[in-house]
Length: 326
Image (cartoon, rainbow, N blue to C red):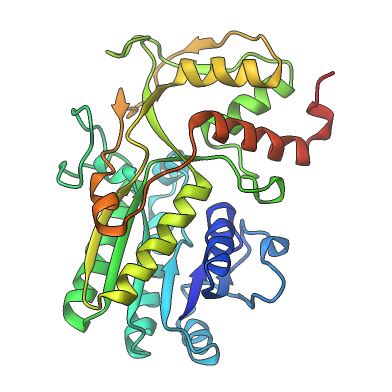
């Protein structure tokens, strides 16, 4: 199999490329490099620079490289930005997916893995989120991911395309320092940034109905997430015609305050968090049930939260050596 990985020069995408090639699959990266980094693409893996909105370029890439499966990760993913720029998010995430699927079906590519998100659930009022939990997204970003799932599923039904939509929970960590997240939009790098600057990390609200009053989330190591993509790709190859929708998480909740305490300890800091007002739309608890992924893919997360923090910190120091403490 030869897999086109859109967004393969990004944080998650680069990990998927690495996992695919280590598993013996052939990978081709398609990325517009708006946030991706070309140096993340391994030697020997072709890089096609282009937008998924460019149907002709996508079609050429599929034909030129003999693509037999697509893993689609290229998307805009900042929740707050999506509220400010909903038209941009719908164009990039939904129209880009439509253009890509049009090229995929025209080329008779048989398998398609879609990067979705736990944001499709919105504010679920359950201890464990299953794939049957109602989807009520609370941001344009979450809406575009849910619409993307619908589009992928409908295309599969109409064309025979085998599909898998993977709903990621909170991604953290790095398989190597060079592949670490360069953005500062998620909790772990946000805390690193504050500590490195000598400032207190922020907690957005401590009056939630949770054990310590702060939001509880399910964190998944990016290397485990990448392995889930390999497992999904192989499941589609082995059983054509499948249509999977799967949570990718650990099934273990960790509070924001607990994460900050762990990061302080690991990095040698001692800066208690400053509590500020809640952010609109933050649900108290979002923790996955990953039972279906285990049953359908034979996949289960291997790494724990400590692994995520340690590897993420190594990546942070790789880019910010001045942050190292004696």
